[in-house]
Image (cartoon, rainbow, N blue to C red):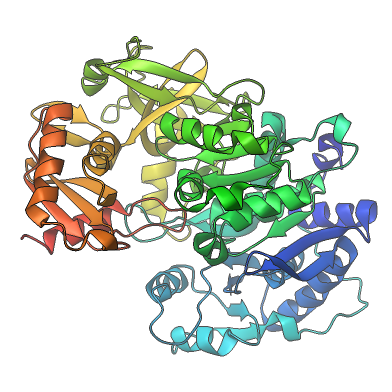
Length: 561
């Protein structure tokens, strides 16, 4: 389907039906069990039949506009259930899958989502629906194992307005409880078209739409768009695997990209870092990454070192540094605000560190006193990005850092059942118009959007605005035992929490603490109030691999030793 054809569909259900008419018996989705074996596959026609059958059953159980929690384990059944909700006019709420009724760390997130959106239905598979329903306790929800719904020959088609709510995308919870972003059919379709304009439309030379490969959880905005909706929009084969399979053997993601000749694959910085740390030379041998045309990468902020190291490490496999597609976005903007460039090298510019600490933008030469920042692309012309003072909301000068505000058709309609939060986040007034407050600091330079830090994460030390990511990188590099770190404020002091690799259990802890303190003082001119050493895997992460800094502060307060 061309972008022009896709752009004239009225809603996401129409989008799927249009692809059925065009592609019919072509494969739409493949799932790789353990990241290796094709354990399930489905064509566009089969997917449509499954979605229509599920939609009929959903309409028997709930009214249009009701919410349905989708708690499927990784696999294709989620896709059929999600589309079934879209067909039926039921508001889909992708949520974490759970493995058992007790003891799963995702339970609290699932319960928080359920209490926020008050679903009428909970959907999963026959193997997990009982456990999921048990976790929800006595909440009045009707369970449905969607894989037990029998395909029918009915011609069920929901009729939806483009401004209807399609689904709720819950945030990953970096700053607190998850919040449900209200996304309409029109807004999601706009963002899908925006992504195509940013570069994901295949070159005509391919002669077909090359596959995409994704390990990202489908309840995460990047995983849902990149692994499910964008492939549907383009008519790509989407090869899915679980995040657990990727985490166990990161090489399986690269093998799948090589095996299927994928041209698009996306991950947060964590994914590329895992490949660097855990893909051996033997595993790298034999990979063909030459057809990987768009390696989308996102984070806050992006690190030039990650891009450089990955490009160098996998160049023998045909991977090109030019394939990296730095991007910026969030659940509140559907997913993408800016990205690119598509052709040429990622944009990396050195800026004066002292100026950035004072909220100013000044170019620098590489070396001491410079901080290299990665550009996150040019914002699409259909979106308006302004940089403002976080306190006054007044636009700042071109040489100043400020909060990034965004307005446009892709922006969510607000937070579900949260008018106060909606007004606070989606109602920023600039020149009489409403903008989304991203909560990120940054600036526009040479047309590129540069993101520097989340506002709550800033380390304010004696009037200097230090970026925690820089302090964390210094800490991790100070001693070979350290694998991850988080820098937070405790009153007027900076506290560094750092994970120590198991194989360094015998290393004296004072040796490690002293190394961190010395490196941070030498590099940043501050002495940490404390250095807290933790076991591997202790630092709390979001589903996309970002530090949950509010939880890290709680962890720090619980360890005053």
